[in-house]
Length: 95
Image 1 (cartoon, one colour):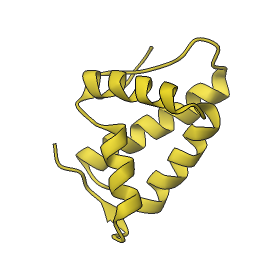
Image 2: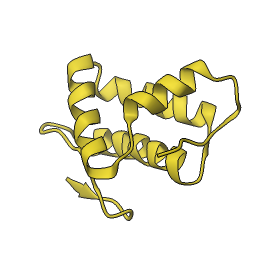
Image 3: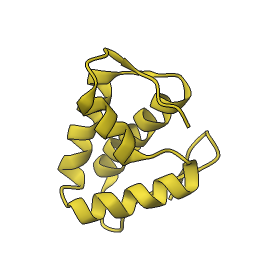
């Protein structure tokens, strides 16, 4: 696990290389920003597309999402679902 500056850990799977960890960490940070300060919708979706290159499996994505939500309180699923459904340029999630 890599510790974030927000006092929760980012899920890291065995076998990920440095580039994979950077891509996934940027995605986790984008999710956290969506809850804490808001984020540009396209930036979030771009981070998700990059994340899916590292984690193409839906089951792994769900596993990571559960772990991330348990530690942070932030839902990967709800955030990405909202980003796909909204037409707003900026996203700010509510806890």
